[in-house]
Length: 502
Image (tube, rainbow, N blue to C red; front, side, top):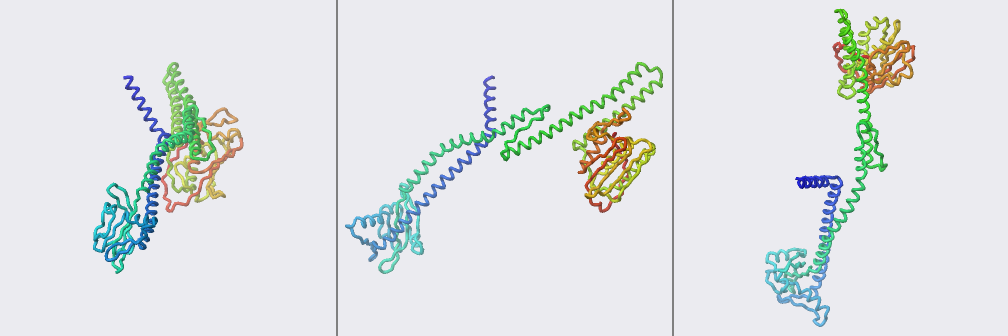
């Protein structure tokens, strides 16, 4: 059993080695290198054969010209005229006659060498084709032993201008032996070149992939509690630096997401603890101390109020979580912000009058934006409800829509309320952050409404700014990209806006 396990582990390690990037890079390089060397070898061999063919053909051409000075055909008999006592002429003529045949136009052999007979005397059809051809014919033939010969064939005339078929040849054996010797040595040396290339490729691949090993080692150090690790750039400006930079940005985004999750968990546990503790305390008091039905009813009413507060917290958290995680899809259409602002002002007239606050509007006509109408209503609902909540009796709240100088559409909600201290302004869009009033220790709301307002503005490609002076009021200024008016605006059905607890 242990032997089987060891064998299985060895096979698994070998399989992992084969699947490694370094092995695949080197293997691919070796395959390409081997194919390239083989192609180069065959190409050079063919080039050498072509050079050999050309040189032999040129030599035959010179010999063919020499036959005009030595060969005569008289009375249908080939005669060679040369000085038999001159060694040079004798050598030239003997070389011409070594591979040689001459026939008449009917294919009757007048004279043929033994080597040419071994190559095979040409058929009549071929002889007649050569005699009709204006150009000489070159072809390679092999004898019984496989020795190649280059043969030049053409027509010659006798003293009466009759056509005769003449062919002379020259052996290519020496040249082919040289070519084959080169090819054999080249292909015998090729395995050594492949091995050297494999060693060099393995070394270079290791050096090239070393940053990836560092990359993997750093990635193994990253955990949910350690997302501040950054891989240093090599400053080489190559693809690996791009990968490292993209990985570092991903880690930063993950770190931000984990921070949001941790903050969300902390916020939820903190915010849910208070109403749950209150509910439990009230029920325990009622259980142990209540004597009458009225006392039980009072405890239940108080517990239900806390349950309602708990429900509002959970609903607001779910809505904001869906928005920030991208699960809350926007339905973007051309929206006339003027109509939305007027509808929301009408809805908040009654709450404003109930709080003895004057709600004014300064609305420009036809302020078109591309937006999700429901989210725009939520944005205005949160801003107006906060303005009314933090404005004392006798104060004023003003809602404005306007076209800004840069072409964008603006929304302003200004109040004459208690204002926000300067040290609180950077945090008012954080979740669960609530400003404590200077004249009171009570903190109203959940601190989620402005977080959702900020998300709505950012999701629509806009920006939001706050101007506030403690004791003199606050103004929220929203800037949104404009849009072309809808070609046929339909009258939208009345939508009851729902604001998040501020």
